[in-house]
Image (cartoon, rainbow, N blue to C red):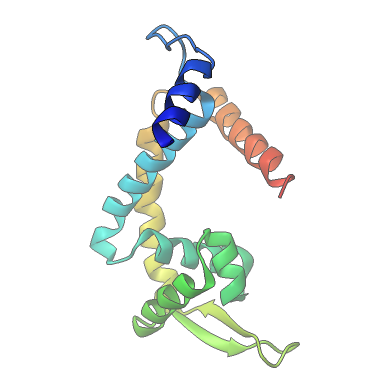
Length: 162
């Protein structure tokens, strides 16, 4: 029976023209390729600081948004709250963040950067900035600005549907 369905399906499946080398790659593919390359290179860049990409992202989010709960960090770092718990534990052990009860909600604990956390983050930022400069080196200043604007517009367009 399975064979019959498979044969029937293959005979009725719409035929699509194979993609040729002259067809430009899809934008979604290019974004994914860039994301993987950037993530890999950031990961390599952070090795001397003994930080993962998730840990670096968490520190960056806290600096940008101020005191943050574990749930807020997880959402902004694109990982689950459970995974963020593990990230935060390591950051606490290294004394890069500290916890403080939220004054407006008894069950929420906010995270904030320690002095050491700020120092490590600044060193990481300098290294990541150099990586970004390498990535954007082939673009003119107006192209870099247009690239950032286009990425932001694309992200916002997809986030509006969530």
